Length: 323
Image (cartoon, rainbow, N blue to C red; front, side, top):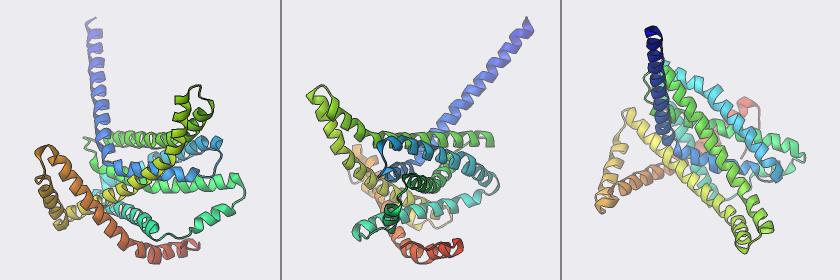
């Protein structure tokens, strides 16, 4: 009997350790996931454009296929690479983060540039020339998954840099939880957003009360506005996150002049307002300065990407560069 009690006591001890480990993984995943907020917002803002032009019945199946592709990107392709880097080449993480941050700055600055200097997109003409809906759907899904791969790589690298785990298994488990949680949050939100106008249309046509029909019409009118808001917020988040990654990376590499000045300026702004607003004002000032730097760095990268990197990739891949 004493042996059985001892065994049960050991099992209870193991269960407590396991529960504590689960709590640790959840806490670390939450902390790491919060660091990726800017990229997540942009991911959720970018994805709906791949659903434009499709029948409502195809929207959820397309989102599901993109979700599966995103999970494959994160768990099968990126997670092993991230773990190898973390344990065998940790010095490569900061340069990779800065590379990803540069991509975010480039994307954000390019969006602003296109708003200020609009031009006809050849990609739109190519899409319009595709007559087969099935082929167009495959093209859109492949494009979405490719975009997701880049954003997922940035999410995984940011999360990895934020994880403080005692061993490699805890680190991998935390990163996997972040990957799954982020993917479900992003594409669950996208599904909700793209179907909300259908919900509004149904209510406008079938609700039994004037309030319900009015709510439906309001949803139909509000969704395009929401999409524009998401686009603006996503662009701002990309520039803020990208700029802050570059500035922090420079500090890690020993070039902390800009980061120290931004910290001092933000500190001064925080202490120039009432104490109740000090923290918010300091954070807002730093985020704004990081974003301005992100815009400036992105504008520098636009000609480099379009005139040098793009043609080189096109020459290597044998494809015609897009303009």
